[in-house]
Image (cartoon, rainbow, N blue to C red):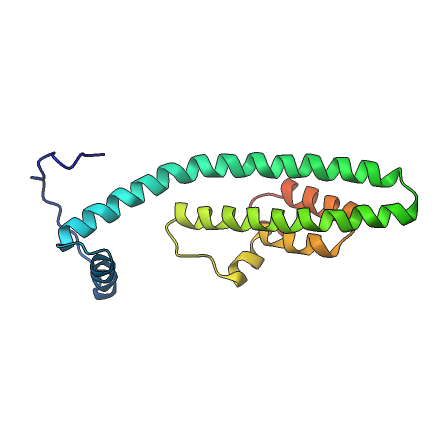
Length: 160
């Protein structure tokens, strides 16, 4: 990256659609930037930083997903050793974890969208992706959730 004192003497000419320029101008106005060139420079810098940070964030999310899976396996193991009336309580306790996991997968989906250069993922796109199926977890027993989770993790990318 460059610092503010570095001479900006390199010209880059690029073609843009009217809607792209309108978006840049709107962002420039909203952020009180004085010139279109400075707005484009800042947007480029931000894009490069997002690209860099998105990779490390995906690593953290993968770690969180692996930890969730370990936790789910442990819960299922404990639940299977309990009498039926207590087993239902473990299912109830797992519902909060499923909600947190769905949030993690939504963040992951947004990071994927940033990495591939798309806008925010819609709910429909999220549900259509494999990771969107985790929303089904909160409506399942722990055993069923673990089976779905393992199925999603073991499928080839893009498979259903």
